[in-house]
Length: 184
Figure 1 (tube, rainbow, N blue to C red):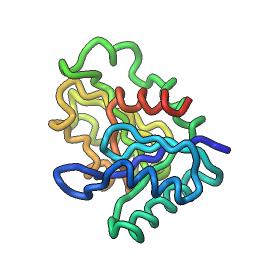
Figure 2 (figure 1 turned 60 degrees about the horizontal axis):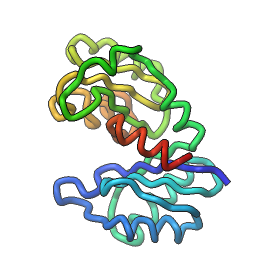
Figure 3 (figure 1 turned 60 degrees about the vertical axis):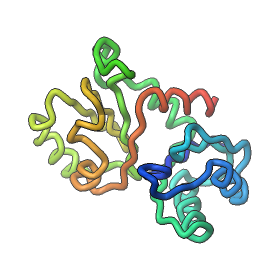
Figure 4 (figure 1 turned 30 degrees about the vertical axis):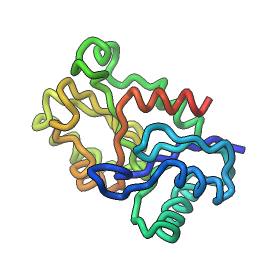
């Protein structure tokens, strides 16, 4: 049995795609996964099961469409991938020394799969227009250092999806760490 972290894009945001977490847990359990837990109301699931993470994500996305008539992209990581992600520190010690009063300046955008070199190079070429915000693409993850508010950065899902050609969903560092604890 593997552990998976499933991230649903756009659940319970702005009154759209309303989905009670109890219904989400029941759906994931019904797909054959065990030890199903959710975090917050925004579509963060930790569960156990077997198979490739991409197949687990596609299965949940398909079930959401069939059961709730919702078109919701799902991005998945294995527990091992998640733990490696939380150990990464692409910006060095300065990520903990600044940031908005409500939390860490660090966020992670999770992509459905690693972007191609050309797409990453295109994003890197635009780095000066995003300053003071910075990013680091590490495999299928984009680490964001946003010293201001995330809601004000240009490095949001829509831009990253357009430039990198992948489905994207972002979580703040506090949520990343909370999901790591649930996955342990």
